[in-house]
Length: 79
Image 1 (tube, rainbow, N blue to C red):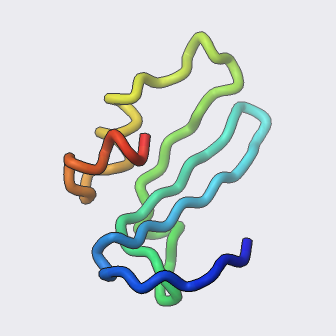
Image 2 (cartoon, helix red, strand yellow; image 1 turned 30 degrees about the vertical axis):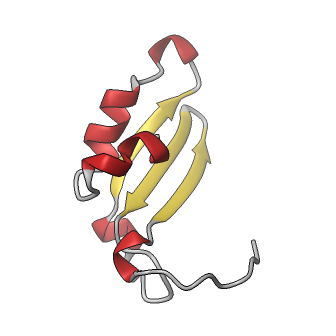
Image 3 (cartoon, helix red, strand yellow; image 1 turned 45 degrees about the horizontal axis):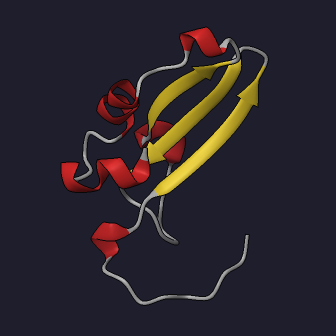
C-alpha cells in the first residue's frame, strides 16, 4: 500500500495488521503507528475474528479489546 504523505500529529497514527489463520483472522492493533512502530507482536492488542459469523464480536467488544489506548471519541470511526 502506497499513498501520499499527509501531515498529521503522531498521536493520530495507528497500526493494524490482519493475519488469516484456519479459525479466522487475527487483528493486531496498536495506538503507535508510523515508521518506528517497533515490535508489534509484543505490544499490540489482539483479537481473533472467527470464521463462524455467529460468533462475530460486537462493536463494543472490538473497541474494548483493541482500542484501550485510543480516545473514545474516535472509536466509532475505527470500528
